[in-house]
Length: 329
Image 1 (cartoon, rainbow, N blue to C red):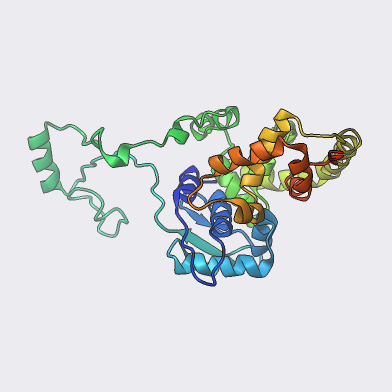
Image 2 (cartoon, helix red, strand yellow):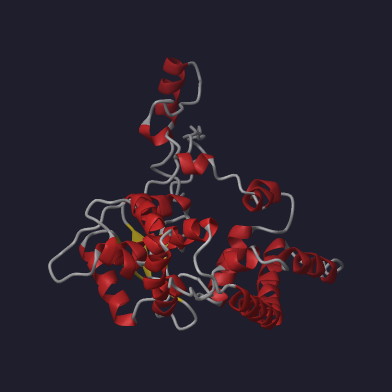
């Protein structure tokens, strides 16, 4: 996933056209695309995946994608992915990635390769000498106040333990490269989000077992990543039935014990946020220009009233409430 793309999608204001889709629905599809975008800000989820993510009908998703293209927010690159080579690759338009510091490299004019792909991106000898004489040989850097050097607040807070433990720089001395692993998994199963595997409770266990299994085979790093992708996909098939049973047991227990006359404060806080992001609910109850936080605050006040919460029980069920409100006599 691309944090830059997700932040861009949240900030992007949607256009409401006559006869077009509701703005919250367009925002939801754009967020789903951004959530699955790579470092190049391209995304290629299948339509089935977008339908599952957004819980919309297939024809609605297709209509919204066409509207996003018309609005200039995404473009069809013409590239196709997946096993059948039919999954469209969309480029998110206008995403600003984090910048890197330019480095000047001097080339020996006698050994310069004119066919190199670097031609046009490096300074030639004369330009380099002129630059060195005027700048005392220092490397140019982006000014601290440059807009390209600004770092979003959310990126500064992105210090979750999972991302710290799997930082690419920490893996430079091992065979595991998560970027290559994501690519291998995406090619094998484009409908699967690799992060679901990386964040699973059994990932570390299977990684250790895989390393022990291949300890004496002396495979190169690329082959280790290739085989580990297959290993994880097979492991998912092994653990998935267990997860379904555990989830079913948990839901059954929750349904058995969650019948209550009213919602708790914790439930009100959680479900008010979920209802604020529910496309159909927000489409009916949101006010013009109202943010998600403002809508959630209004919903929380309403849910504190047991009679009002009972009226919205069908929406509550759609966002994860498994109990039943007994209503007020």
